[in-house]
Image (cartoon, rainbow, N blue to C red; front, side, top):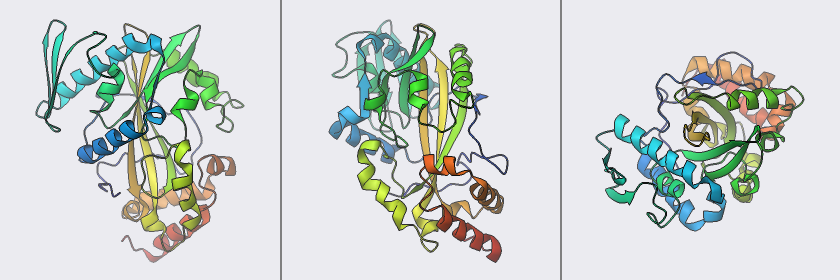
Length: 318
């Protein structure tokens, strides 16, 4: 599958010439939990196919999250209608709502908060209208728990496995996350999030191929491409994968909505920006082994570096 390679809109994640794990969250300038990109229709078709055929892998929830799910429905619909009035609208008459997705030509009437309004849970319904994956973290007993989520485009993790886990347990596999105290610092940061003051961050990785659905359950389908990367095919085959992650405190339930919008850019498009080419070459050259291992880059890092070095030396950007 080919995604639009637009350098101007690509959320390039780097600032310096080195990279380490950190809490790189920043306050949002525009408090918008979801976005609509030119890939909207194609990504919605893919999401709905995954949700229809792999529901257990892509959607999970615990019973006590329904109220929080309705908060997410309200937040997402309000943001869509306000930011994209030509594509989405909502009419509210008390608890009777009508949501209109003009892009997909779908109109849904429902009773807000009604138990039997949808044939599926509220979070499952609204997830079929946005490109983002939607994760609900609930706060209780001085901790955060992953209690519900729709995850069609994971970066090598499993929603079904992580359901109900505490924040620190979910992130335990990240090397150095606990040892360097990041787990506690980031947890405390999240616990202090305030309603009306959302934050965002960017997370990145490299991947062989251009697949959005890189779940643990499908590793046998996409993981093997890592062994096929060469200097000659790296430009087309390897993509930098960036997740724009947004954090919104839900005022009524005190949960946290965590939205993930995944973007892919091929290396052959990335190197057309000379500054990015030099910077990414420096970052990848210096990246410590424990990070390359965790991000799944080790098998083909050298081939990618050969490709980037050749572009730097030749001065060619195509």
